[in-house]
Length: 219
Image 1 (tube, rainbow, N blue to C red):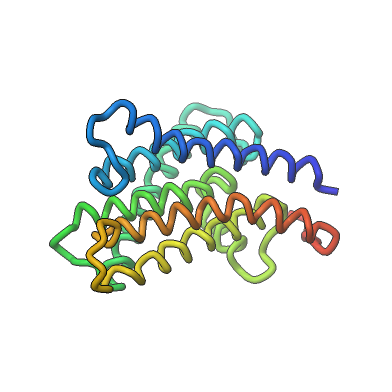
Image 2 (image 1 turned 90 degrees about the vertical axis):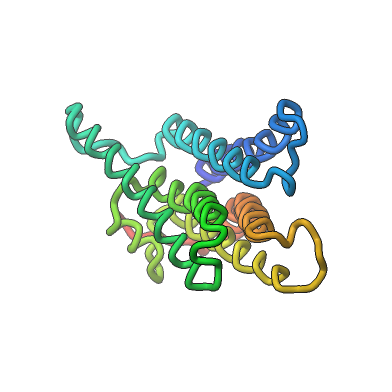
């Protein structure tokens, strides 16, 4: 029933995964001394920027992004402003949560906020692309049985995988291994990215194998 949507989803996710790969490879070829560990913030913002640009372009081209209710320039600018505001507020939210989980409040504040930007790019941005700047729709999707389409289910899976990956990535930090990837926030950002990539693979696969059991309420 949803074979077309699943194929479109798989293609979209392949492009997003390729953007993460290119955001890692291209700076390594262009910037002397670039490495995921040594110049971690550069890599982090490279991945965030690539995922943001590709997500906005691909979801808009596929028509997944909800159309504007009004076609006036003022309304579209207002919607763009709200999307940017939600993106920034999400960065602040993730920054606060990470600090409450034990990240340094003052020391390494730039690193902590950079991790928040990455988490926002991998999670909140997808909400904006799929649902628009509509907080009520976000609450609906992430409530029990709130998904109304395969894209809603995909959103649930990818966001969950990303956040779980970032959480699991924090476990090695206090261990006395003296590895470069244990520096804050390398393991968390790597965990979030790996979780995001895992979600990109798992979401269409899970939906494909459970498509006969999936039922969605009408919007």
